[in-house]
Length: 301
Image 1: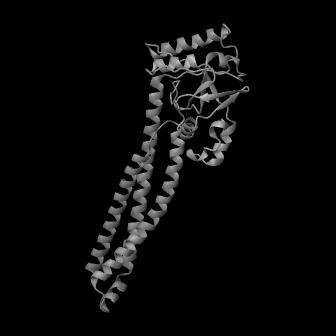
Image 2: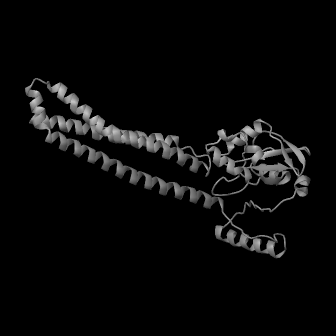
Image 3: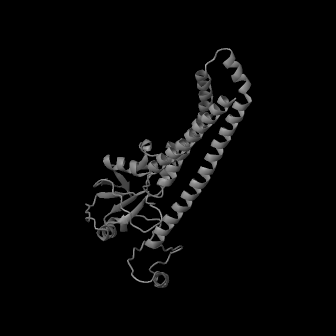
């Protein structure tokens, strides 16, 4: 993949060093006829190629910006001594049913060129639109694979796996539900605990300092100035931990965004913004309650 990635590292969320490690990742090749079958099945227009042209396809979130740049630059590829130029822009088709989008880069060439290339290994993807009971379909598919191997149509098959559209939906929904529950439960518990500890600490400290505030009042300090000092102290005590937490969260969310994007084009910005609003509302609520409690305590004394 080096010709497509080199010099374009900055266009990815991955670090420059990590992108360089991907230089040695082998490209995937596909026949134009097979690729057009997929496009036709999903209602897209079929594409054409000349003998010296290729199409680039990629649906892997973190590499799409790099591949788009390569497509815009009309990056050429040299295969077995022959140079091919890119046709069309970057294609982002997903040509197999899977739990995650994993096509880091597929080069589509005319069928006769694929036949002439020195291919290390090949993978057969079967996209089937069977109707009926899921368990029966799974059994039929397993039997179909066995027959393919027995008939030597897949002589070197070392691994096979099946996944249905319904299973992809279930995995996606199940994972998101579990993660949401964990995030909300753990996040809110820690947030409320932290805010409660800070509130109790401030109320306790202000209770211990009542005599000092009395002394300030006796030497002419107005109640307004005392309240302002209490407010400044409470804001400082609450905001310092929050500022550190926001820095940690920014780094964590940025890293999580990179990892999540490998599962597809999932935008977590909106969810992060909503979470931030909830955190600030709860935090400010505790801060205001602490200030009012301290103020009331001093007024009574």
